[in-house]
Length: 460
Ligand SMILES: Cc1ncc(COP(=O)(O)O)c(C=O)c1O
Image 1 (cartoon, rainbow, N blue to C red):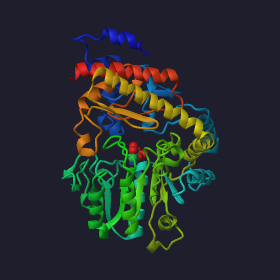
Image 2: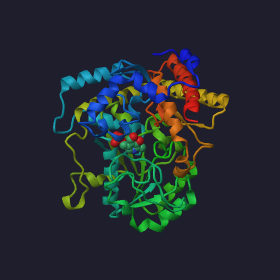
Image 3: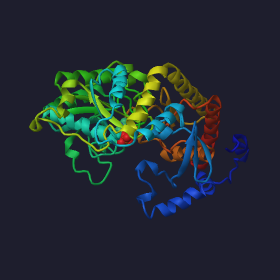
């Protein structure tokens, strides 16, 4: 990796832009991208994998490090969009991969690992009385909504403006776009091809009176209320007011509308093993999880109250059940890796969370100092093992305020981080993992110091 101090000396008024530098040091990725575009739209298989000016193509990862096809080495602060809590190549994961290799792939029936896996999850998140394992978070959300619809016999989905729930039709509404007024938000599509906007009822984040009013006005049609208990992607990191979570719990309980917490992003990070619901002391009816519970293997799961989840039981009459299946649901590969990581967390969570949360706190403190020293208009967000810093005057209170942040400068800053060996997916918040060393933490902070400064000069 490059030496940070030489970068600082190199800052001059006629310096190259972060994009120029990126192209120069990532020629292999650029070449691959140019060719890949002929085969894969935009050269990628997921929208979020494309970050301008072009994506990096990675070849390997180990510990806290990632390497790209140009041989550049990075401290990985993206951690696979969250799942890589233990770092890469952790012995527990390597052993599980060996076990999966000898145990073989897809049995076309349930594996012997699912039971222990689900028991560990329920031990720490007791609201998951019954659980189904699927392959992605997006799938889990889709099925949780379907179960809620089957249970209530009602159709409409109430979601919080700005909360992100994955990439299916049931999720791509009002996550970076908005309609209506702040008090009465209306659904806005995040994609062409969505035909179900009318199925949505929108409520404003952290706004108790308007949210409760809107839920009550629509309650006869509502199949569920879904939210991220701690907002992550859409409206940036914002903690909820506990009063808000409690108010949504009360009104949904009163009208028997299933309350769904999407903890795919923050589950087993925010609040540690008890997840956000335990940390805030508010229990939903259904929960979606993903990422960490698969230990890096593709996963999603949804679960919750037994009487609601019972709707997907194959023991019910076919005319009175919700259907959910899948060739790979609960597959032995994911179950082996997921079980190994969850077992490790069950036994070592105090040590693991002490490490990742303290690294997160030190980085957030470092970012606050940098912002103050450099006199930058930005604020630090995140908690536990997550962090970012947004170019915005004060912590955003909703999606509309978050959309006013200086995204251009943020992208420039994050690109500089990449250029100098800290892999943060531009525009996405960052994570800490068990493999991050004290030296990594220091380098991350020092790199931000440089990146903030360069972004001020190149994207004023
Ligand atoms: C809160 C939340 N819900 C759902 C999803 C979708 O999960 P997946 O990407 O596994 O489909 C994500 C992914 O980042 C997420 O952050």
